[in-house]
Every structure is written in structure tokens, then in C-alpha cells.
Image (cartoon, rainbow, N blue to C red):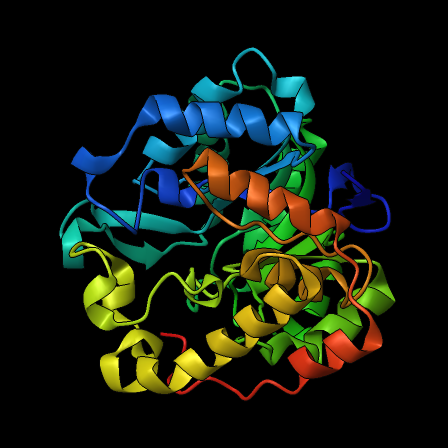
Length: 326
């Protein structure tokens, strides 16, 4: 797989990474999860060159980090390991569908304790990328980011990143003034393009990497779902506006265009959607999540897809989806 770097001075990674969240959180019931298969998927991802493995302490909570730690126990040096801090579970199973109820916590004392717990669960002595998951409105980002920078100076973390914050250039600059920002993680795909206006140009001018999560529109762009009823009963997408039946019926036109173009050029819809992201600039590493070897290999194949100007024109002209992200 071809590679890029996480920012101008960051580690080298494959241009497609792996988001591990869905292996233990968000899209199914705990009884439906297969840890052995998930670990095999992580191992195969490394074999395919998908070296950026992304998790977070709040996924589960904690169980996703533990799963990734077990998967990487004998191959830690092959992975570029990323996790997050800034959210904490106040009720591990009290939310809709049994998901945790969380709150933002950017207090320095929480950050200092969280790094050691993440390292323990991940069975490692250092992180390659530690990301601030949310910005606590009650704590200036300078204080939170400063506590995270302490972990870099202590040798526990190599690089810092921002993840799913209220992404503005001003906020990124405030963090940069305290410690370099290696990467910014945000939702970015053919049906979520908000970052293109201001944030992506700024990242590229500063040599900061973009890590798009949900690059396949939470599976929508692959054409897997044609109706609301096809979503699993414990699936968090059932609560998202874009997946509601009346919105989904309109949004299916987007997926249909993606499939038609993918069929014409001989790739899968997932590969087409990922290739469009990769065409948006350097230092961009989407992290599609999957628990299935078949889809993993499909995603990895996007690294070899090159789109011409006409193909990009069709995709750039896709309409905005109906419904908010959340």
C-alpha cells in the first residue's frame, strides 16, 4: 500500500487506516461480537499496510482499547497506534441501545490519569498519536492540551491530535500555540464535506494530517442499506437524522450515483468513496471501520484507485444529504 505521513513530521502510515470502534461499540449488541475475528481483522490490516489503528478510551467504555491491546500484543511495532481522551462514561450502559452516557472532561488531572490507563489497556509503553476527543467547555483548551503535552515530554506519547472537536481554525491555532498538532480527526466523506471550506485548506497549509472518520458515510455510501428497517435493531444509526426513512429515501440517490460510477470504472462503491477522499490532498488517512475481512480487503484496495478529472467532477457535484449529522 502507498503511504503518507501523519503531518509533516509524523510517522509514516498506509493511506488507508482502520477504525476499531465498531468492533466493540455502537453498531451491534455485545452478544453479536466475535473477538477472534476482530483480532484477525486487525492482524490482516497490518499485513495489508493499513498501519494506523484508531481507538478511544470511551469506546466500550475501555473494552475497545483492551481488544486492540490484545491484538497488537505481539506486533506493536508494526502499528501506528492512536487513541483518545476527553470523554468519560458516567453511565457505561445507560444510553440508547445500551451505549454509554458520556460527558466531556478536559481537566488536567483527568488527562494525566487517563494516559496511564490507556497505556495499560493497550499493553504498550507509548502511543504514536493521542487525540483530544472533545473540548470541555468548562476547561480552556490550553489547559487540556498542556496536560497532554506533558505526556509527550514524559515519553509516553509521540504526537498529539484533535478529534471530533468543534472544528475551527481558531481552535486548532490555540492548540498549536501550546504544542504542535500532528493530526485532526473529523467526519469527512462524500456526504459530509464541511471541512472543505476552511479547515482542510488550513491543515494542508500547516502540514497537519486529516484523519477522516466515517469516510463511507457510516456504511451508507456502500449501498448496504436501502431502508430504515434494514438497520440492526441496536444500531446507533437508527437515531441519526440522515437515516430516518423520509430522509433516507432522498439520500439513496447519492448512493445510487456512487454505485453507478463505481460500476462504470470497475471498482466497488467503498473504493470509489475512499479514493475521492484520498484525492483531496496529501496527509489524508481515512479510517473506515469494519469487523469483516471481506470489507477490510475492499477498503484496502482503494489505495490503488486513481480517479480522473471527469470522475472527480461527478462526485464533486453530488448533492448534499438531507438531514443533519447528529
